[in-house]
Amino acid sequence: MALLNLNIPHNLSKEEALERVKSLLKNLQEEHKDTISNVKENWQGDKNDFSFSAKGFDLAGTIQVNPSDVEIESDLPFALSFFKGMIGSMISQKASTLLS
Image (cartoon, rainbow, N blue to C red; front, side, top):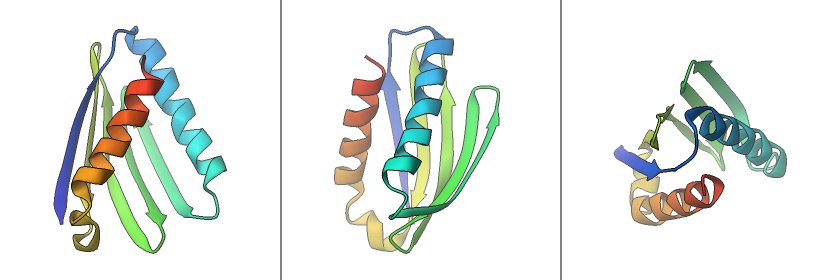
């Protein structure tokens, strides 16, 4: 396993950032329902414990929405650990666009 830990800054209100993150997760599920399955989310306030399967890999982690940033932490399966940099960059890019 490889730990993926991202911190994406934003200048939005905490509430707006939270709404955008929640809507992104719903949209991704719809857009990629042929690839993503077994999606589970457990929002408690500003923190989401999530898990899902994608192309045969099980992923889980947390998303924490803070007043000035969003923290994403996930354990990547060993087979995906080789792509950690690419995966982190792609998520950071999408999240930065979402939160701008």
